[in-house]
Image (cartoon, rainbow, N blue to C red):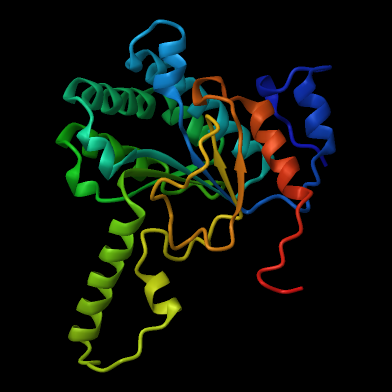
Length: 256
């Protein structure tokens, strides 16, 4: 049964044709996206980088709602990396102001679509105003039972693994388990995404073919889809194209 996509898919549009081709029994359970290309998109238009970030917020809104209405269970967006702190302060401040505005304006949309928001990363690095906005949105959506929306902030795949090991070491010491052999399951229990399952599909926009320190542990067997589309131009059609490409792949996990 094709879900109601509301204003996201117009009758007779290319999106409607793509939607009709989706096998809803074979949806990726968890989709992760590296949102890339805001700065280059703006530069091509003779605009400052922050113009690309502002426009990219609409792509976030559309993608989150589209994913939820499709029936994807988990969506993880790479919003801000630890490395991004090296950018000019004015750009960083703008990014977090846009995030706070998104959380304020789109909270009703999240609730209307039964979406639960969960930030992941080194959240202690965030400024007080952003942390407060995130806590509020997380609390307001905590009762939602639909799609889980992970927002990776001050995030690094290597930092996540280091944090997981630190947490595991504290657990071992607390329980007096010196000499314990560590398993993959032990490590997974201490990741930011513990209990949520690894991504089935990783989408990267802007054509760059690298994973940029994102979910390094989790994407061991994830299908990777790269689109040349810059993030500010990413819309429902592009997400549907990625899902359809995923559905034509055979996932063998090392088997023949």
